[in-house]
Length: 352
Image 1 (cartoon, rainbow, N blue to C red):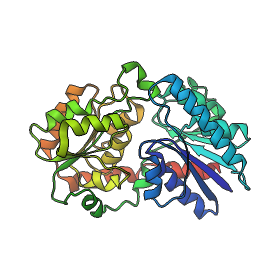
Image 2 (cartoon, rainbow, N blue to C red):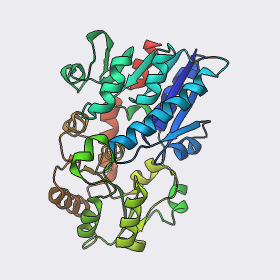
Image 3 (cartoon, rainbow, N blue to C red):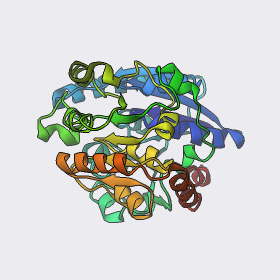
Image 4 (tube, rainbow, N blue to C red):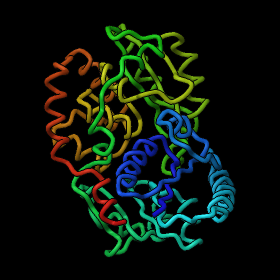
């Protein structure tokens, strides 16, 4: 069986690589496509995976998203239709373009999704999917509001991160690549997804609240920040403000090792906070509204703190840095919690 994975955000290469490894053990073949956005393509290269790069992000306007999406559909359709052996299944994390292509070419789709707040991509992908795989901490009614039917729902009792963190071992070489030493103090930062469809009403395209947070944190913190801007405009703002206090890697690096050696992770999104917290590193998400999976992770004892205002995020960041709880104790506790959670790879393997 040939399984086609399409990645559109930086979280997905790690998740899809973990799933593909399990499928390959069962004799299946994986092919990968992605769009030219953020660190997505360079993460595939870091994982030593062959990937076909097609299309780009549509930017901060609805028209731009529509235009880029349609262009990418055409590119993907030509590529997939031209393959000598067509995929038997398509898997994505609610990629509108590849899901539309798969549907049009008669390829069944497994959609993985943990973000019902991203309503636009949910409505464009879930109704066209054969199965919807999601964490059971998200209630079914949220999927029904996006067009799901009961027979599509395939919940699992865990979080995505279990798939790629089970065999993790930190690499000191990652620090050396960025000019850091194992004894250096640093935090990891990631701006909000200011150009996402679900953020457009906030009028923050290309901006970031991470500037305000770091400005306050650096008043009492002597370390540096390794930041991963989503857009060039965010990178320019951060570099202009903080100069050599920040490090902005030009391409993907082993972020898991960075979390492991860092004092704190703070992000305006979810993925980095989830990953870092799942490794036992104190983490903060300043996404402005409650998200099911983030609340669930925090509730079961993993060190993720949901702060819904910038001021509360600043106060919590200072508190966590000053507190500096024993990392070994926290890592041991978190590892035990993760061991009890289900991986999405198990669910997907049973569906194919």
